[in-house]
Structures are given as C-alpha cells and as structure tokens.
Length: 544
Ligand code: KIV
Ligand code: ZN
Image (cartoon, protein in one colour):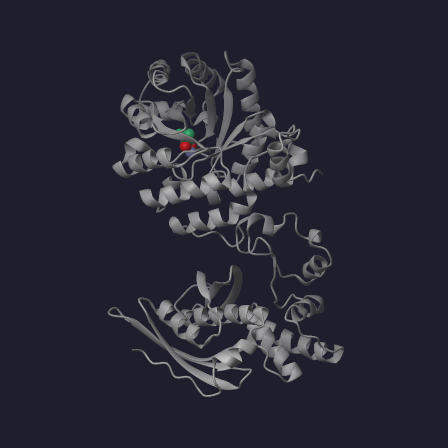
C-alpha cells in the first residue's frame, strides 16, 4: 500500500519536479449551496464568506457559494466571495432559465476563475409530475439555455437532475444536446441517493463511451447519501474516470446529506495506492473546517462520524489500548494529528486495562511501585463500574489517594452562579491551591453564566489562560440527563482539553475548565510562580 502523502506531492510540485503518478481529482465544494439546503442549516452572507475563506485554505478546487437568484443575501454572498476569494474557481448555480443564468453570471463577474452550473431534470418522474413537460420540450430548453449562457461564460457545467433514474436513452440525448451547445463539464447527479456503486460507475463509462462529444468534456460526480452510499458511489465514479467530485463538509445537505468531503478525501488519501488518484486538500485543516461548519450551521456532528466525530480516534477497549500504546498503527489507519484533530485519545473506562492506566499515570509524571499500581487499578475499576468514563482529574485524585498526596495543582471546592433573564451573571468560587494548602475565594461577572464562572476561576490561577472552546453534550434524554462539557483552553499557543460530566451543566463546564487549566499548569511547571504570585494569605476578590 502506498503511503506517499499530499505534503510530499506538494513539495515535489513546488520544486518543479514531475508530480506523482497519481491522477488529480478536483474537489468541488457545495457546502454553501447544496449543503445549506439541509433543514435548519441556513447561513448569513457573512458566515458564508468566512467559510469560503476556510475552504480556500483547505485547498478545494471549486466553491459553489450559493444560489444567486434565490435571495438578495445569497446573491451578495456569491458576489463577495467572487471578489474576495482567490486561487479557487467560483461557481454560480442556476436553473435552466434566463433569470437564474443572468443572476449567476452577474454574481460571479469578479471571480478570478468562474463557471456556471446549470441543471435541468431528466427523469420521467420529474418531467411528468414536476416540470410537466415532454422530453422534446426539455431537450429544447437544455439547448437554448446552454447556448444562451455560453455567450457570457466559457466554462459551463450541466447537470441532468435525477440522472440515475433517467435511463440511458434520454440521458445520452440530453447530455449530447448540452455538449453540442457548449457545456464543458457534465455532472451526473444521483439526486435521490438511489444508485449502487457498480451501477453509478458503469453509467459514467457508458456516457463517456457512447455520447457524441463525450470524450471532449470533463465529468463530475454528485452523490446524495440516502442509502449511506454517497462516498462509495463517488469512489466508483472516480474509478470510472471522473475528474471532479462534488462534496460538502460534514456531509451536510438535503435529507441524509451529500458525499462528505472529509470521508472522501481521507479515503483517497489513505488508499491512494488502491485508487491511483489524489486531491489537493491540505488535510491538516480538515478538523477546523468541520468544526467551523458545524457551528455556523448549528449542525451537530455524530459522535461516531468518520474522521471528524469525537469518537473517531478514541479507544476504550483494553486490547485496543494495549495495541495502540505499543504501536499506533495497530488500531489507527490515519494519523489524527495530520487532520488537525487534537489527538488520538485513550478513553479510560471499565474496558481499560492496566497498560493504559499505567501509561496515563506516567503521562502525569508520576511513578508508582507495582503495589501502588495494583491498588490504583482496584480503585479505578470500582469507579469505572459506576460511571462510563474515568476523567483525568478523577484518576489524579485516585493516584493522589494511592501516594498520599494531592496531585492536581488546583481543586474547585465550590462554585455558585447567579443567573437569570436580566443583568450581569455573577459567580463566586472557592479554589484550593493544593500546593500551598490554601483556599482562594474569587468572584466574576459576565454576560452569560459560563463567562461569569470562567472569569471567577481565572482569578485564582497563576496563568493567563484563554478559554477557546466549549462543547456541550447531553449524555441521555430527559430533565435529569447528565451534561458532558469539553473545554479547550490555550496558553502561549498550546491547547489543553478538560472533560467533565455533571448533572448541572454549569458545574460540568467549571470542572472541565479547571481540569484543562490544571493540565496547562502542570505542563508549564509554574507552581513555583504560583507560590510567588499568591501570598500565603487567602485572597478575596470582590465584584466592583
Ligand atoms: O442533487 C442534485 O441533483 C443537485 C443538482 C441540481 C446538481 O444538487
Ligand atoms: Zn444535490
């Protein structure tokens, strides 16, 4: 299996050398058009611009930023993206009607490179029930509208909508008509996610071989995920020779969504040898892009989603943890750090074995005798039986019991937040500096309860900690569900994550924040500085 990576190829290209023998597949991103059609995923123009910049940095080849005729906001977003984003082809989307085409052409006028993407239904079911037009009428529309658009733009992508339920005879006819009038890219969409991989690949082969002019154009695959086959179908199309694949970040889109960018790209990247192709995606930006899109669209990512789901690189089974610690490749086929995923994580729970616990203990810089390790293991298993996951701060507490020492630099002893519909939120906390054995009383305010809590806790800490990220999950349903908080903080450019579960979601946040800060403090070994910064007297900070 070939393991040559993108970086190597890019470097080779930069050095002006012959690139690898892999054929380049172009990534056409339609997160901001087809992806935004997902129920509830609407974006403001400003959000679209930010995401488009991120997509350009990720290395996509084409961005379809919206449907200009659909709203003034979408028109403006496509226009601004055409003006501001460089190095990427911008695609205006249109039905096969003059007003749509005019609008898409105007919106993309300023783009460095642009294309028009126009579509027209081709299946009988769409013709009979939606368009209420005969096949001949549809061919006439395809011809006249492609010819009309060709006056203004050279690169025209034509999509016969619902192509996979159209049947060869009419599909060939409509594609031939579009090519004759000037279409340069033929996209064959599996609009309803109906195709099987072999069928979809074979359909491209037939079109390429039998359609008049079929060898002069580029081909594109566009797959929906109704049967969970969007990535498999796109790969089948690549095997058949398509040079472009249409995808969305996190697979967002109508119904079950579109082909997921990160899954397709990583399948290509990981199995390049088997597929013989490569993309220009800078994989290190995948995770950040996925997070950005998920947040902007308020569209959560399933825990077990490949590549970007929170469990995608977590390991709980003892046998897996053991193998992983000996050699990562035993249970990981991708390096999460190359995707920008914080890191592959060993989750300590009831399935974890001694090996994993010992490893985590050593990461804390603690050495235990075999007797101490055995006693820790017994305590750990008791705790793990009662709860799903043993968190780092809990393990540290158990280690502390074992060695008769408190290992966390700081402990959150108490926290209270005053919250409501009006005014500032206020918090007061008691934090114990375990090294000095002193309790610090702090308070904070903020526009929200989390802000007030974080402001309070920060006052007791000897580090300038930036609260960079918060993920909140409900671990079950109902009012009494436990909330899980994952907090990321950064200190001098380094990131630390703390996790906590609590029935009170604000306390979960406070503890997760504390755990992340403790990691930072431990790693930076600044307990000495803490001693200087805080006198041995209690510190009382009151709200002004
Ligand atoms: O799924 C589809 O058919 C589309 C196009 C119109 C290309 O999104
Ligand atoms: Zn689609």
